[in-house]
Amino acid sequence: MSGADASPGGIDKLIHEPARLLIMSYLAVVESADFLFLQGQTGLTFGNLSSHMSRLEEAGYLKVEKKFVAKKPNTILSLTSAGRKAFDLYRRQMMEMLEEETGQ
Amino acid sequence: MSQPIDLNAIERKVFSAQFRDGLQDIQLGLLLLGAWFLLVDFTGESNLFREAMPIYLLYCVVIGSIPWLGRRWITARRMGTMKPGTERKLKIKKSAVILGLIVAIQAFLVLLQVMGIMRLDGGRMLFALGAGTIVFLPIALIAHRNSFLRGYFHAAAVGISVTLIILFDTGAPLLYSGAVITLMGLIIFIRFMIQHPLPDNHLNTEEG
Image (cartoon, rainbow over all chains, first blue to last red; front, side, top):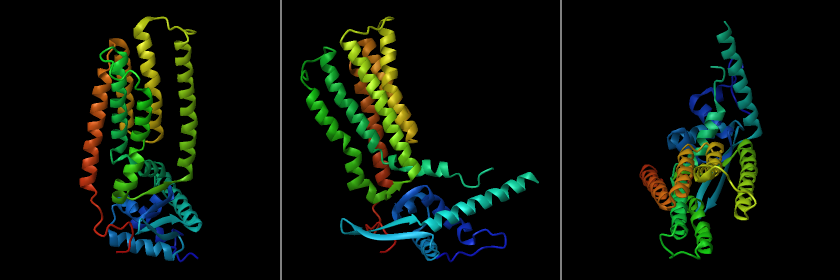
């Protein structure tokens, strides 16, 4: 299921990487998006998005669905329930950390 | 910063991204230009389109499909597609209900006016302002609910146009606002096409 790394602070290092965090954030607010849309929104290059997508898919955070639209391949991406849970947990942890920082 | 990732802002950006192709502007602009053809009739400038309402309704259906057809065949291939999340879907449903209520109230008020049951006292100015506001509200509501900033300009342009039409008994304001919004949409559309060429492999995928 999840192959995510956890840092000593419990923060999911897989999500913490900026490009992957961007991908997770964008996919968290939609039901699904295709590769081209996500590439345009995140500003990531083709190869960059593709490699991060594979990492997230391996971790079980991302569902990648490949189909054909008008005889052309179309890759649809969406977060799995494990991905949504991991992302919510990550946000909560980051929020708590920031609140602790500002409280000091 | 109390929230490290502002998901609401991201969601608004993602959802409003679908309006960056200018097709919505072109649609509204052409609808206004079509309405102007009708207004030419009842303002007495011409009788050319006296029986134009059925034609205009057909025209509305054709023009109303511009964003859908345009996205399906032209712009989605260049910017990709997304399905909105559950919160946005709920928001769309709520908007449809609110919009339906507003339109029903508007229709009811127009009916009362036409049947002579209700007469607005206060003269033409008040009537013009009221009509302008009634037209402005649903368009502004759509703009607000869709996080579509240009929609506020559309709402203002249409609201002011309706007010001026009633005040000065001329369809010209619709012609001007329709032309401006259509032109704006065309410029945005052309800029979009230049900025978003078809991907090299014409594929919407991570595989070449």
